[in-house]
Image 1 (cartoon, rainbow, N blue to C red):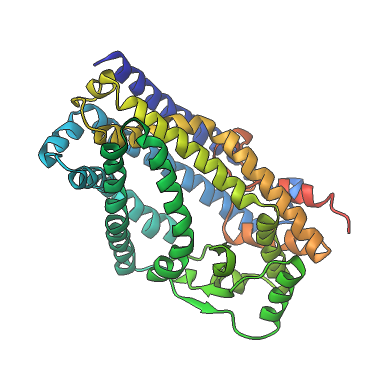
Image 2 (cartoon, one colour; image 1 turned 60 degrees about the vertical axis):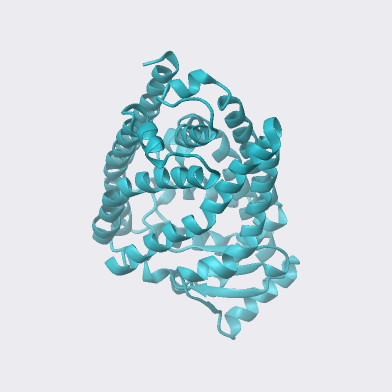
Length: 412
């Protein structure tokens, strides 16, 4: 084993140990609060719902420890058993299409390794706590559709990127990043129209007081959407959400049917105002810019690593093609980016606070949003008492208590 391979091995194990430790301290923190609802949260949930959320959190924690161990073992096997270079020789990569097929198949095979745990999570864990509403047939169809879409979209994109290496030489990484960024922007328009309907049914929110209220809210905010649609999320899960997709005249608001059932009109209005807040505060362009910058760094890193013989030798490859560099970078990137999660989540949570404040200002009250957040946390059995370190690494949104405290400072 080379020095670089040993460093990678230690970093992967360090990440696994950190994740295991975070799960453990979160379990202990939740256990310490399980017998009594914290005073600040006593108005936010019932004792029965709180006890169920604690049990769900602990069950999820046990499952996640198993999952991260399983995934770490699969990653180590892929990287250090010689499977990847053997598979590369099997594909006899001599063209950009063969290279694209190799990367896609490696990704697909690693996804297959996760299927037993995904099945258990959906049909045992989620079923146990009353969330699962999907069928085995629909579950398998989702994965088949995802695989076929991945092939239809991913293979041409990868082949094109690999062709850029032949065409552009040393500067391929910059133009590859440009093309990938354009592709992402196009997908923001195309996905809501062509891809999302393959998985879910979208129907226009029926005419009536609720639709008029939500459209009037958008008018007040200067946020015009093409449509307000209801998504049949209940055919897979009782979890709920709301979001908007696309941009410009293709923008539309989407509400899960479960959300529409759980919230009052004023609470739905507040949730929509929160989503509009993300738009008005330009959070989406900011997140896209940050993601694009990270992607640029990634493309450049691949271009540098693709020129290093020691990088290839560490994992049993021979230098000469950029395809193994793409594959290895994709597998190793998460090991490095994990440690930056608290920084990314810091900005994400700050955006959530800003969107909350905007929503309270738009509807002239904080109470409807607070009521909506309480219901959503209760219905989704959210962890109300996460350990601060755990939430820092994993939570893109502030906790219910943190959001209520911030909204408590709002004044009309």
